[in-house]
Length: 195
Image (cartoon, rainbow, N blue to C red; front, side, top):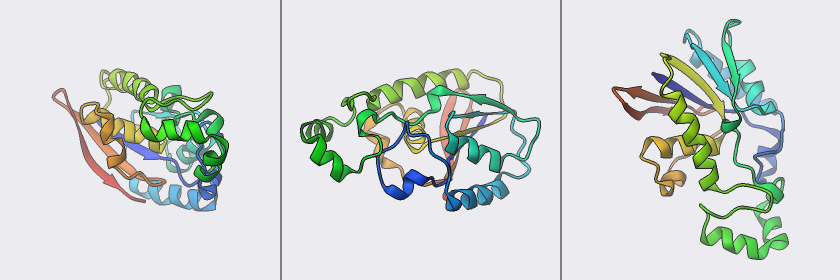
């Protein structure tokens, strides 16, 4: 199985440099252009289906890159970005002023810390892990996932054995395209391409 991981194109919130996962924003002009460049890279690949995070930015990206009218598209909640709760839409500087004690806890335990009303990286890992365990039991040759940076880094972490300390060891720019292969019961990262 070839699992193509595509991060959404640049969005309105990317420009603001804020924490956002649950904020449902659209692609900006640069994000649309990125999607069109990736479309060329995906031309001719026959996907059996696509799984997409049900957010505007991921759905818009899929709409740009998908040239098949027959592609089966599955909206998948487990592919949503991490929810930053009350931290959503705020820069780190703003968070330091509004939530100084929470920021200290976050700095000291980034994996288990849960922002007020949000979720932790451990919770993100568990939902992505449950999706991946189901996916590798499907009978697909090629499948497309359109999702977010946090989810993609989590998938890399899952492929490498589940050690969350590896999470920050990967870059993941807008419209990056990665291929994960599942062969003979093993997952491995085959390639990562910047748009």
